[in-house]
Length: 224
Length: 395
Ligand SMILES: Nc1ncnc2c1ncn2[C@@H]1O[C@H](COP(=O)(O)OP(=O)(O)OP(=O)(O)O)[C@@H](O)[C@H]1O
Ligand SMILES: [Mg+2]
Image (cartoon, rainbow over all chains, first blue to last red; front, side, top):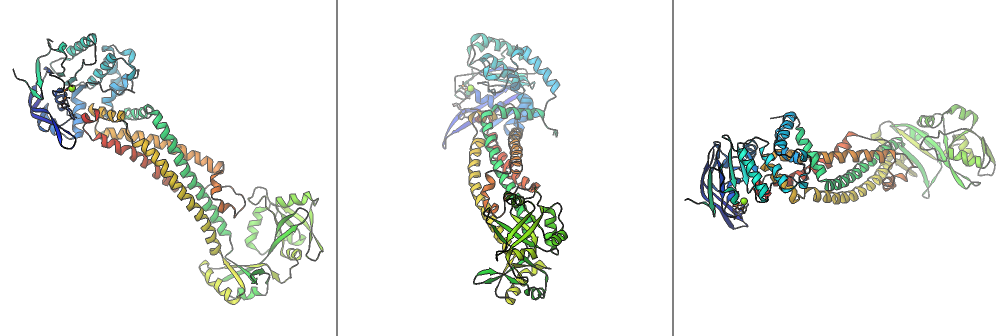
């Protein structure tokens, strides 16, 4: 389903210097599998997630998702690929602060000009399952942190993705909200969905529904 | 792909305009002002040009005066036949006109003698006066006067006639046959029309003299040629052609509008810099937003389409608003202030209303000078951001 083959990623800093964020990474995540990437800050977790969602391209190596070599796709096709396959919950939510909750959730679907009636139905479902019905029209920057995160999750689910990616989902949440989020994740797990979570939050370490934990240090996968 | 308009995208664009309200209100304001100025100037100059064209068309082909010691003196009628003999000359019309000083009121009247065969004037004067009848004017030896003249005479207790004082001190009593219509451009003017014969009497002119000649030419291209022949024939004449007059009118107008255009270009440039600065400077929030859109699956062209809608709606709204404002300002209010800048022209003629001279071309020019430039100014920077890696932009 998701495959990283000998992936190296370097970032240029200024004219000459570069940082090697990932070194020769090989990773496979199967269909229906839930994987946790853990490791200290700066170890390269977010970089792996970006490469899977084709938000970025590897310096060398290949990223293959659903049989597509997304690391070789042109910009417009990676956008389409994300629209159709990926639900990404970003580290800092990345909501548009001046739009309402509902408008933020719709954003990924706008370019495909959805059927208004079906869309409305789907929104109602989502908002009631996340208990945010009453906040649909509220401008996002006026929502609490937990509410904002739920909006971010709904936005990542609106396109019914088969790959769900969550980057440090509990970094800005208190314990209660973190546990709530974990319950949401549990419900999202299915035989159809692959889930990749990056976190160094110990709350994730002993969860029954996480199939595999991968430890990353300095851009390399640690083997045991 | 889908051809129909994406309503969600359109909604999103409109929403975005309002989300960045204060910035966009500012741009709307400055942009509207800029287009308003531009279109007002084009409307005014168009209007004056068309007014000028009408005036120039009414000018005589050739006017001939006689000079002595550098001053114009009367023209003997005996010259008419020799001028008529020049090839290409269609008609020679002696004119009798001048100024009559009315001491009581301390004003000058313009006295113009007319003859019934002066077709050129027949049309014009018929337009001026309701019950105009050349033959009656000739029979009665009466006169037609402007509203201004009528008023001045009334103040001096002249009801339906006036006693002109001839140079020799004698009096000539002339009946007032009519007053010019009030709604013409000449309504407030000081003209008195009467027969050439009476005019000569008032001015004490010899029967076989005129003030100057108007020469009509069959073929307009012959005008310079014939003008030269007249000067050769009568070296004491001053010959003024339609072209001479028209060039000096035109020069004056072009000079004024050129000067104005230069001023305008400078201010337009300033305005545009302001707008460009506001419109093309992408804030870090906007940058991030573009990154987010990309990250959730918008293609570069989706983003550009959205930015296009945004820019088009804003600039087109500005354009339409400005156009309506300037139509109202120029043709309804008669362009106060701005019209005075073209003063060189307005001193040539008494006060006039700007005639409606709305043409599609002018508006197309205004449109293409403003809206697409604005759209480009906003889209290009967005495009630069949109073509970077989403990851990079969101950081
Ligand atoms: N766009 C970029 N430009 C330059 N350096 C980058 C860029 N993105 C990541 N890096 C660097 O690559 C390394 C890995 O970053 P990454 O964000 O993947 O770490 P992380 O494991 O997600 O850390 P955290 O837990 O803090 O989110 C870091 O040293 C980071 O500074
Ligand atoms: Mg990270």
